[in-house]
Image (cartoon, rainbow, N blue to C red; front, side, top):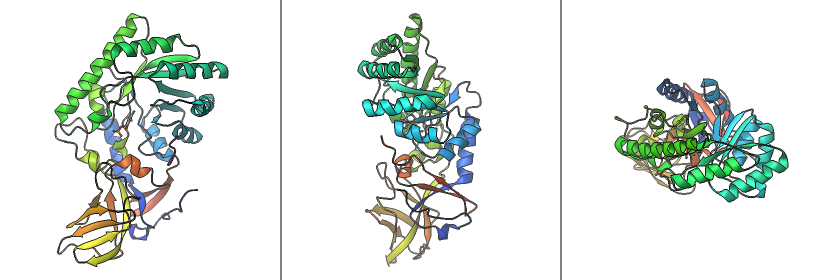
Length: 373
Ligand SMILES: Cc1ncc(COP(=O)(O)O)c(C=O)c1O
């Protein structure tokens, strides 16, 4: 069951049923243009990660601007985007178990271009057996841990062995490597990020070259996020990029050191609209958006556009604003608040209220919200 639609086309900000998630359409479009402009000399593909937005309309707009397709993190997310006509999907992640395999084979039957990642021979063997039984050939990338310390084969030698295993299995077609350095996205200094991606690229190149010596071609070498994608693009190794957060940005990403940074000046386009629902003292106002309205794993959200007031505390349904003398905050005001971390905040909402020049222009369903399987 989805929540009620919080606005109608033509509504102004103060008429929204808050808390609700809003998109500044012009800022979003400028972010997309900046991304593609920054990659005009990149000969490879751009495959923005849909885990950030979970919104088919937004994915369609990125494809219309030149994206080859999307990444998803979950099989169930991929199902939603496939239902909405996205024809080129990389599940940039591993999955195991009968239920997921069954669902993935269902996707493979209807998505024209579909691929997924493996990092374990047992997982590859199960995928292979399922593919053979279904009479399908599945495109598979080997994920390599390039410093994130999450999934991915740990070292180059093991990655080569894993790729050779995939190559030898029926029902699987080895299409390349994935190496995403998530931690590097949030390194504050440009030098630190450059060093991390340089090491990642060198590792990927080493694996690519070792495979080439055995006659195995890595068609795709994919990875990268908003904080580092220009480095992967310039590496001469990666030929596909997966940035996601650039469409929205968030408080944490804005803290990335921009000067000399390998990241264009993307703008905040995603805001939670909240109402001042209590004003107990001159120094304290309370909005109707707290922990259930924002993910705070990367820090508190930030009040935008109100001078002299700050979001200082979140409890389940409340957000406390600290208000300086002279700041204009009144009971009933609808304010805009930038999330600390965009992806998990988006996953709390069913609708994206699209604003242009202060008015609701459209409502886009966040159709893959809650798709965790
Ligand atoms: C595999 C993978 N690729 C790409 C991204 C997108 O990165 P970002 O949101 O930093 O742009 C993520 C985000 O976590 C990811 O896990």
